[in-house]
Image 1 (tube, rainbow, N blue to C red):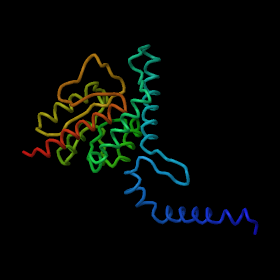
Image 2: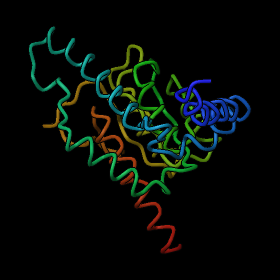
Image 3: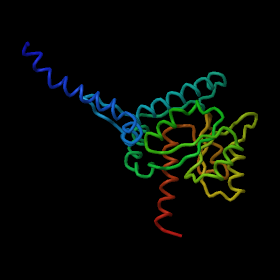
Image 4: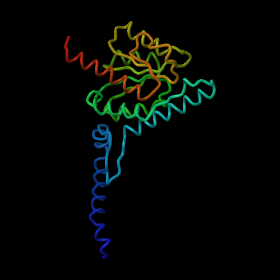
Amino acid sequence: MTPQLVDLIPTLLWFSLTVSVLVLFYRPLRDHVVPHLTTLNVMGVEFSFIRESMDRAIESACRHDAQMALAEKSKQWKVEMSPSDRERALHRARTHARLLQQVRLLWVDDHPENNENERRMFRQLGSDIDLAQTTEEALHQAACGSYDLVISDMERGDDPMAGLRLAAQIQQKGMKVPMVLYIGVLDSSKGVPPFVFGITNRPDELLHLVLDVLERSDLLGMMGP
């Protein structure tokens, strides 16, 4: 046996042990360990789970809005986010990771595939997410479940204001759950619509809005009734 091969034996043993652990404990690691990590370093290789999901969410939003802008020739429909904006959102998520763990979100969208990356980002941060594709389904789930926040699109089916109608009905039914609109095209000149906490088309701003809601709820909880 050559000296070079002998030197490789410890590395090969560690690699075999790592593979064995991953095979034996894949599900527990995936469900209980990985969601609470922002990075994982294995043999010098760093995996940034949250960063990757956010980057994919941003790329997806940019592709969607670039197509819209190409058709309508409007710059306001492009999602632009600097590296500093991305890092600021990630830093805040790491700092307030406790708030995002075990949070229950109701995500309403008739095309859930459009925000798959965003949902993955929140799940990796420890949040539980239920999906609804219609206003009726969302109202039923909101009435039956205990949610910390509702995230909704604006347009569903033939109703361009479905998100606003859902927010109004949640208020009318006396449900004490805040709502954020996450849409594809944002006209910031219109401000925040009634009955909603905030509105955005950017993944980083969505993360900030969710944390804003959770921080206020946490503060109210500490203050008591």
